[in-house]
Length: 597
Ligand SMILES: Cc1ncc(COP(=O)(O)O)c(C=O)c1O
Image (spheres, rainbow, N blue to C red):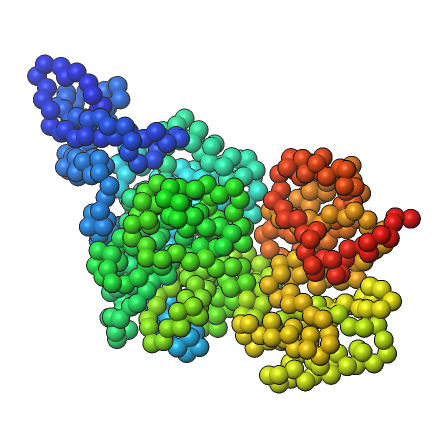
């Protein structure tokens, strides 16, 4: 029997069969394959009955591979190393070779050929299965016997659970207690051993590290692991092969969503090893761009908060290895916003009749932005549709925002005189706007004083930049107009709230909050808000999204400002102060000097 162990003294009669340098991990839990502390691994001959110590069995067939692996850990893997790992990755026991298909409508609209890599077709509706399975398929029989563990409330959890089922091993999946039941059920249905712990991902992660050490399980990292990266890289291998079937091998750029960076690292390694002229473009949400900020800073940056809409890519800190690879191999990074992603979900639907999740549409949103910026024509782009795990009731939000994202709806605040005939004149201006007849999608107003009225109006628009032109057109006709098409406060709340001027609401401060939606969450928020200060406004609208949005006005006398700021800091909910927002001032804020009666 052969054994390997960290440095030991050998008994007489035994000889060394394997010698390889290694560096041990200092990351929390000690499961990261990323090396820091140098040392040596030994293999030595031993009697079959010898046991104990910190020795691990190495079967003769894997000894050479282990030595090579250990050696490779002393220096960063090159694209050539990754190429080999990708070419030999094991993914097809569980994953399918997803289609690469042209998006005909989008291609026509953009005057460029757009190809969609349909990772939404995977058995767990995302690519995560590839990396998880490749990692787990490399484990030793002993490791498989003990089982694996991960912390995830998302697609990685399902990938690990399914892979474990296929390999006949136990998978412990630690999820925060806030995880929607739908996702808990999906993981259980795949045979995962779900442990619910803590309120947040970091609580769940901490508990997973504890269980991993306690039960001797193997941690399957969602992105920062060479085997996971190599598994994801098989997508690029398929894309280049599938191009041939589509009749042309031309490919100018691949657009890839980035969370922790495992997917983009795998794709970039393969593309740069095989067809380096193809651009690899990494895409992040504008409120969740840890990789882009890290690459710009030259070291990994931890974001204090991440946007919650694209949950698949909401990562505060990217991986060490993924950072190294993305810094070196990704040609360009782009960010997109929520409205653009909603519009892209619709574009994918129009071309495929399938719905992808927000992270799954990032690449398409980026292609549209890239074409608009660079004014390209006749190029070929591939977008990886990386996932489709979205709650159905989120579609309401997506559908509403898709119109604004495409700028098919313009939202304006128009001020008209409170005098006979002015309303009619206003309607005539709408009827005569350049670009032909258009629908009024929304119309709210309230008299704010005896002289003027502020109207909140939604109008169908014909594309990017038109809302500004419409606003200018109203102004030319003597109606002061403010373009609110890109104003988060107006789109989320004010359109449903117009008419809220109150002379009583003196010293009002207006705040927007976002919190994970689940039973009791609103009540909890309210109880935390139990005021020293009077609540003068409260707007909550359940949009079927996973996250609730609340607008609160509190009356805070100027002398209480410091105490109020301290209260906000302890509250623990991300928020945006909107007191100076001009839309708030037009529609809601108390007229100055009208003291509380
Ligand atoms: C649908 C989807 N897209 C993109 C990503 C980001 O992948 P990575 O963390 O490897 O960058 C994830 C990660 O879970 C995901 O689930």
